[in-house]
Length: 238
Image 1 (cartoon, rainbow, N blue to C red):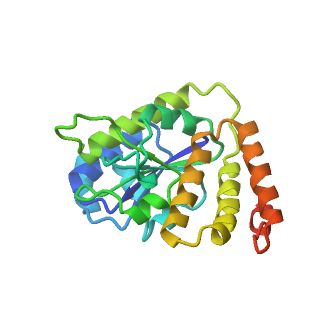
Image 2: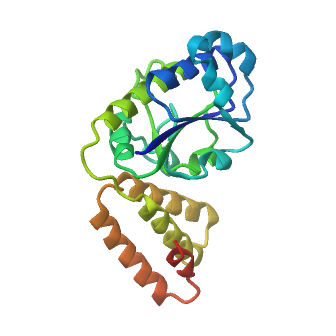
């Protein structure tokens, strides 16, 4: 990864915001984006101490889409995981960090609101979903604590980068072809969205295996070319 962008969606507490600004200094975060923050940035400065400049330099946007612009890979976080729900298939923080470290460009780590986390719509906009393993007696972590754990894993993986970084554009290509095919082959809208998310995340989990992704892309492009109405030109322009 060439840059690490931390995205806080709807952060509600000034204490958490200030502590997270300090974490940005601790773990070499390159960019801090705030999506419609509820917390007082001025109050958060008190808790940021010597990292207050991070709050001054933060990019404030209105939507998650804006915060993710220009990123090569996005990691959403949630305490709720499910092997039956494509949106909530869990990925261990260390595995997510290993994947992120090998990606060219900017990696975005997206943290949700203290009260309700990220919505399903927001989760669907990310390439992967990361869940921190915790006791089933109390799964939810404080926002600043969860951010610290994930930034630590990303920091360690980033420091140990040894192999050449790969182009995550393959994930976008897979998504484009799957979208084109699913419009024709999957009439049910809800099921179609699940298929698109599942295959995009399958590609994202394997972004480091370029040969495998190229094989998948070859098959998808051949299928698209053979099916009338499949708009493969969307992908060919990338």
